[in-house]
Length: 134
Image (cartoon, rainbow, N blue to C red):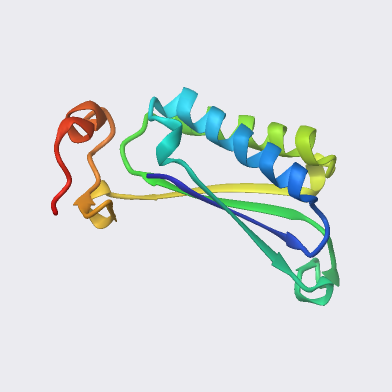
């Protein structure tokens, strides 16, 4: 259901670091938003070193942009951002001042996964029990 895109410059993260970060993002999202880890998607997007700037200067930040369904309690969303940011620094070694985590959301009915419109938060169990269309 959720999609997290991690953007940085090429070679900033090893394959092992990417796997560890994806695992942590999945664990954190699953724990806070009460969804199975099988529905958490983490994508890595690597840019050429001269394609990423901060303050008008070439930079090496880690930008994590997440999409979640509208309707999660505000406290959960704040906890989600904070824990993902802390995990990103811990796992990658990139200083916290170079990590940006942004969570965006939209109504569940604006997304389809597995051929079905996503459920609203709190309705996941019934959604998971339903059969997917053929």
